[in-house]
Image 1 (spheres, helix red, strand yellow):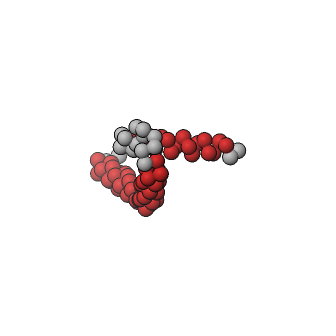
Image 2 (cartoon, one colour):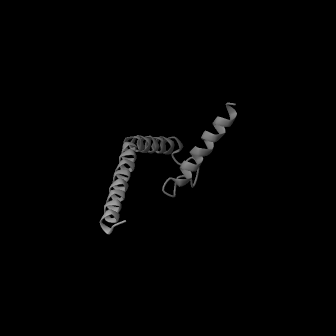
Image 3 (cartoon, one colour):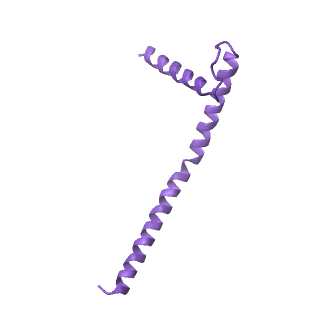
Amino acid sequence: MEPQQGMEQVLQNINRLNRNLESIIAVGNEFSSVEALWSQFENFMGRSEESEQNGTRPGEGQRDGEEGREGHDQSFTEGASTSH
């Protein structure tokens, strides 16, 4: 194999890799609207949960909403298990 043929093959492989990376990025970008919608849903659920509790459970939701989210996850799991 001549050096020029080897360089052409390297160039072809780099171009193929570039096209594959571009297609991967395009697929990832298609999920941006879905991610935005779930973020809005999460923010809405967090706000409604805070307004319902309004301090009735001491200490919940005090660390950037982490505990509030855990409480929501538990109630969802409990609700799912009781419906079966």
